[in-house]
Length: 197
View 1 (cartoon, one colour):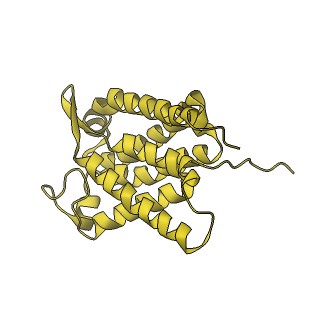
View 2 (cartoon, helix red, strand yellow; view 1 turned 90 degrees about the horizontal axis):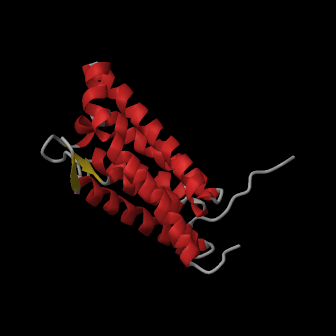
């Protein structure tokens, strides 16, 4: 029976092999990841008629560097911080806090970030993070799933036409740029490192 080849993501090069030190390092990385996600949510780039955050770029980079398990744990910790009322999301605290904010118009996208991290992290665990075209394909799939989840949630709130018009279409070009950037950066970092087995 064939088994799937699992390779080590970038972050594994800096983690202790086992024990309490490894767990402490992973906890530190997860917390650092939530800080990066918060900063990326608050950073806005004006591209056309909408402001675009750098959050999807951060999710993709975290997933590719951390691998699936640590990336998903980081995203779940980030959502837990938001659920407890910390102003970690793009529209907080101006548009509300906690569960009420998470059940609003961005709820589907927030849940989609977890799935996005799982897909991109899964690809990194299999060594796709060393190949820009393979990584781009995985990240594009992750992006599409995340956007579909956001669209479906928003469509239930405001209808499919407005959901497409305001929640998907304005972000397509920017998100494609972020996917291409992330898919280029991670293999470039691997190329700078000594050969890894």
